[in-house]
Every structure is written in structure tokens, then in C-alpha cells.
Image (tube, rainbow, N blue to C red; front, side, top):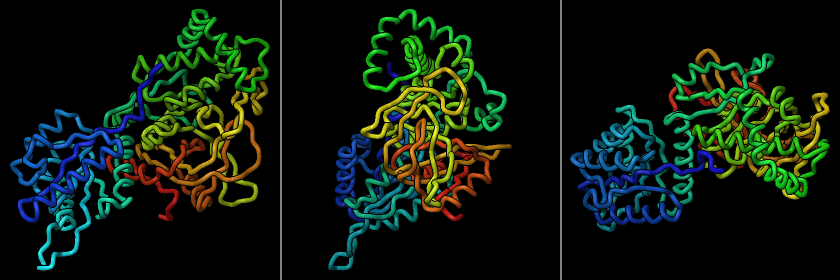
Amino acid sequence: METKPGNKRPLLGLCPIGKFVFSNEDAVKYKKRLQALLGEWNVDFVDLEGVLEDGLVKDQSHVSAVVEHFRAAKIDCLFMPHCNFGTEGAVGMIAKKLDVPVLLWGPRDAAPLEDGTRLRDSLCGLFASSKVLHKLGVKYSYIENCRVDDPQLKQGVDTFLGAVNCANTFRKGIRIGHIGQRIDFFWTTIINESELLERFNVQILPIDMVTFIEDVKSRVKTNALTYRDEAQELKQSWEITGFETDDPLMNILAVRDQMLEWAQKEGLDGFAVQDFTSLVDAMGTYCIAATSMVNDSIPVSMESDIHGALSSILLYRAGLGRESAFLSDIAVRHPEDDNGVLLWHAGAPTSMLKPGETIKLGHHWILPSPLAGMTHFPLKEGDITVARFDGDRGDYKLAVGEGCSMDGPYNQNNYLWMKVDNWPRWERKLIEGPFIHHAAMTYGHLGGTLIEACKFIDGLEVVNLDSED
């Protein structure tokens, strides 16, 4: 069942900048090289071929045609490479009128010719254009002036696209389905729903728990044979204990499908789920495995943590959907390494299973309950990015930090030991707020992408856990 995709790359408007001075031939050469590279990198883009002569902006009179073309294409962002110099007035007006995130870059200029003349002054043009963008209040990213084949260019484009995809979470608006309501003793997950809507374009869709449960039970009855067959298949690949019959497992599968159907029907970008105890009692099982399966394609936070859902969505989109995100607890410090910490909870995406391990479904090791259904499996190793969106009294911040997996003691539920550069600094920044113990994690180093994304999100301040500032 399809859900709203979070891994669709933003549509890039390629807007090459030239000028009547310097070499037009050289500018066209670099424009063509960029077009080829973007194709090799599987970037979705629209250029100015057939719109302007040579497909280059070289005069302020070009502004209207360019803006009309890109608006019709519905671009998400704008790449303005300065291919020989820069027409700064046109750059500023195009960027201001389109009002999308802008990326600046220019190829590193070659040595002067033997007669002392130069084919390009791309760096000089970038200085002029950046000043105009700044003067007009246009927010932009920048890739350092480098050669077209340098790795900084590809990395910079990838970072920018991830930042745009992340920023579009708020720029274009998102919907989070809230199944149930906040449990009284979870004061940490109290949020200002009205403020999220007004300031960040976040819509919360309440899903009544009674209706949800009734729909799940109806789904089980209608699809009993299918669910029974799938339950048998899961029992062959998972280690499942604590169920006397297949009925609880069938209920878990129906919860999964009900969530996916709601996501598709309502255009949801994520879920926040109450977890217990209403759903648990009604289903005769913890439904954490359903969370794990849904989490592979759409972020889910437990314990009615709306800000946690936002944290996971931001991470998922920053990585362009390459890896799922998991809302973990920052639990305990490593017993031997002062810079190690445990990322732990339940309901991690099944795609995060450590190779060679088996997903286990069993009892809750903290809460005294005869019911089973809790997921137990270690997470795979790799580079990690952690993020937490949170705020109080109108002050919203995004904590961002990078680490990597490390060896550590065995734990139940879903867990990974993470090593960072300076855990005491991380701890102090998180404790000083406005953050809680829930933090989204994913694989890869995306800290720079998230920090860049915040340039395009009004009212969201970055707290860089990897910096002393």
C-alpha cells in the first residue's frame, strides 16, 4: 500500500548565469558540463534551454521570462551557477520573485591567458550576486568556489537538495496523524498545536482511538485468511513468543495496514501514537511491531510525541528518504566510554535490523504485563545523525549532532550504542533545553544538511551539539 513519499527529490531550477562581458563560449561550456553532471547524479531539474539564447541569463531583461518558466514548472529550489561572471541584478530579481531556496556556486577560475586576459571572473561575480541577494533578503546556500570535477560540488548539491526537502516540511506544510491522545503523565510531550499550525504550517489530524480500534477489528474480520497466512510467514522469519494463538499477531498486522491506509487517505507525513494502554488492551498485544513495519516507509513516534514525529520527518527528508528514521530514547551513558550513550526504545524500523540478527517479538521487560508484542533487536552499525525539534513559550530549536555506532553491552528492545566527540557537551546542551529524552536518529552524517535547512525555516534556531558555541 503506497504512502505519501518522503524520498522524492526536489525539482531543481537550473538557472545558469552569464554576462555580456567575458567569454560566452566558456560560459556555455560550463553550463553544458553542469547539465551532464546533474543527469549523472539523478537530479530532477528544469533548465532554460529554449527560453533564453544559450540557456543563460545575461541581462536584467531576461527576468520575466525566467520567472514565468520556472513558476510554470513548479520548481522547489533554484541553482544559479555563475558560468563566466554574474548579472547580479537579474540574479536578485529572479530569486526574490520565485521565493524558493537558492544555491550559489561558480567554477574555480583558470589562470589568466598568456596575454594577461581572463575568460571568466566567476568568483568576482559571486561576490556581487551574494550582496544583492543579501540586500533583498533572499535566503541562499553556497558551495565554495571549486572546480567542476571537485567532490565539493556533488556533495554541495546533495546537501542543498536534502536541506530543501527538509525545509519543505514547513514551507509546504505537513500533516501528522495523532492516534489517541496524550497520556496524563507524559508532560514532556505537551505541545502548542495552534502555534505549530500558525508558525510552521503543521497540521495535526486527531484520529479517535475508539474509531481506530473498531476499524482495525473490522479489517481483521474481513482479511482473516490473508492475515493468518502472513502470521505464519512471520513466525518462520521472526522469533515470536508469548502468543498462545495467532490472533494477537493478526491484530498487529491489521493495525499496520490501518495506519498505512490512513496515511494514504489523509496525505499524512507521519504519525504520533498513544501506544498504551487502550490500544494494547483492545488488541490483546503491544502493537509495537506494527510501528516497526510502518516506520519503514513513514515516520512514527510513540507516546503521543508530536515534536518527536517532526524530528523524525525532518531527518527522513534530510536524507531524501534513503534511510528510515527512528525516535529513540537517549537512555544511559556507556559504562566504560565517557563519550558513549545508549539510543534505545522499541518500534524501530525493521530495515534497521543489524545483519545476522533476528527480530524478536516478546514481553515488555519494564512494565509488568502478561501481554507480548514488544520488538527486540539490535540496530545495524554505521554513521549516525541525531536530531530533536522542540520548543516552549514560542522559542523553537532543532538540536543536531553526529556520531557513530560503537560496541556496548546487550540490551532488550531496539538499541544502539553511539559514540560522539564530546558527550558531556551534548548532555549539557540537551539538558539546558528545551529538549526531552526522545531524539530521532538515522544513518549517515546529515548534520550539515539539517543546519543548512534551518536557513530556509523561519523561527527555528539550530543547536549544534558538535560545536562549543
